[in-house]
Image (cartoon, rainbow, N blue to C red; front, side):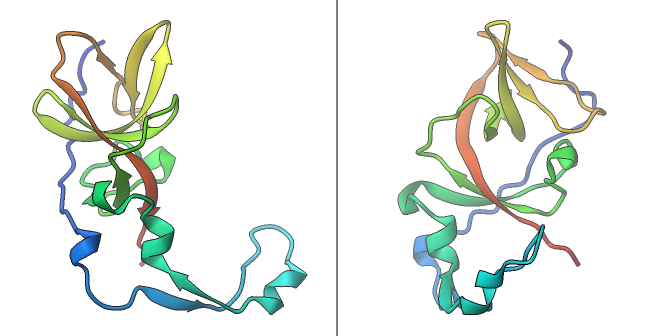
Length: 150
């Protein structure tokens, strides 16, 4: 399959959680129902530690900022921050940050008829088949996304 015509790289802006200072804990005000309201939401009394929530393996977790729109149908937009864990093994359908032929990219991985593909979530981009001739390195598995609404 041909490579995407559009430039589709991501800019990596590393934020090392170990060097972060300050408090990442916030009070949790309760649950919000995306379906039916939950009566248990009134009894929530807890602190939310964003580092504890977002970082499973501190030494192998990085934050990257997305530049591009090849994953918009997966809800990943230009400017979003991805939490990437380099220690995790990818599964079929995982969203990965990869280094392919000199550029970083974020895509969903899929095995089709025994071949490995990086699948964009935007019909304007074509899947990337990973074969032996590709300079391919898995950089990490996306575990969370931080999306700004306004």
